[in-house]
Image (cartoon, rainbow, N blue to C red; front, side):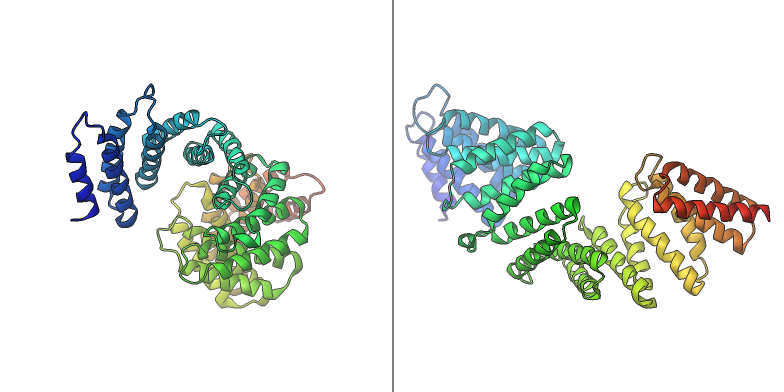
Length: 444
């Protein structure tokens, strides 16, 4: 007889009204949850939730016996697991409500308060990621800070609390750009990668998050030391995430971005070569349906195009074009995140046309250029660049096949680009020279 069967028999011996029924219900629910964790059968989790509800009914609020906080805790946890498995928002909402009640039953000084604070912060962070309500994120940060105070250095749960607080602050920094959040992220990151944490399961995650925070600061400050530190921390995380680790691809991807950025800054070809190598390695971890597959394809193509510009190797340009076409197939027409890959593909097709006169590249560049403009209406920060690129393509097509409509449209697009740009901007001078050339062509 297995463990669950024994627990069912125990429950049968404790009918309604029996003094041992609550404990029998709780044990069965707990056993079903344990089996779900091992075998991932959703029916076990569903039954565990049902049995936990029955147990909770035997511990009403006015009952002075112990047990209600424990039942609230485990029912909330099982509901959060089902939310993560099936995505039913009602489960997450109920988990939050139950966790709030448990927290109220565990005031300051009571055992288990740190766990309540942590779990409620965790659930609110999940709801923020679902609904983007800033108030959930703010409350999650407050709760996790309070939990961290109750989990001093040396506490086994401190690392997981640091990780959750880092995630929440990262979300807020991304959305609001608070410098204070970035400073706190770096402080927490240092704590998360302390040597005594090396054996903890979250150690590699902490290294990865810490490295990402230095990269964020580099984006704001352009201090090369921040970029250097980010690269070294990502290398350390990569050593911890050995081949076969499912999170290795994200570290490879972030390291690729850092190395590509340093290549742009310092021009060291070794950085670009390594970025391409790591980009290929990161892609091997992803299936075609993985949500990041298109992004990884785009970034590898971007680095191959950079190498083509540097070394003029035709195979790099050809591969970049194929990767970008594949990335665009994964991103449905009309989505805003198509524009970076569209823009890059226009550039690659234009270069191949300039260098090798490949038939069809100019027409393809014009078609893609029009799609980019539809995705980036007036007010988009990159619209001027996209207007200029399409104007150039149309002017080139006019040079090959003189059609007045192409030249007229190129003039209109370049004029619109100049209206967006500020005099003194390097792009302003380029667009102005191109416009003057188009006008001269029209006069001739």
